[in-house]
Length: 198
Image (cartoon, rainbow, N blue to C red):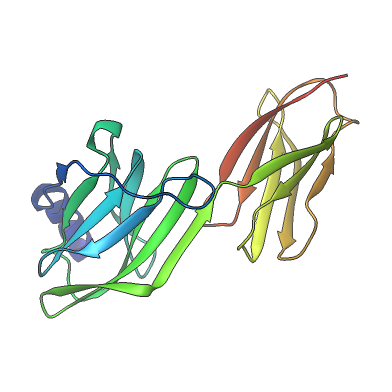
């Protein structure tokens, strides 16, 4: 535990986030994406077109570093991983439009970006198909959690679906008001506000 704490402190102090401008692509649905590339021996470059919350997570799921890339800094951010011991790590970047995780391996004073170990989730699409009826489309996920909360943040509905299940919701039995869908796999939950009207 002390070693992990030292690593986290070292990342915070010596990590030195350095930013420079740049423009980068988008996914097919217009959502800005994040790309991670090796820079120097134990540094990586995080390319993003939008503000994101980023984190470095070890193989046990412990968050070693968490920080924000602000809108004015979006472009290139250099991460110095010098104080990380050999092992496997994940660099995650997220906002309410997407979540991405990139695997990294640190070995012998080098960092390798694991190109085959990348996961990206795009915010699900909430499609109305009738009055107070919605379908949720979130391709590419094996398991999808769906929860619905009312205006007082009370849980109205909670269900887990498997890939291929139809995610349709008829909310006509609910009282009028504003509701919040919380949707996504365990790794990332997206929120969407809807109004039930009579």
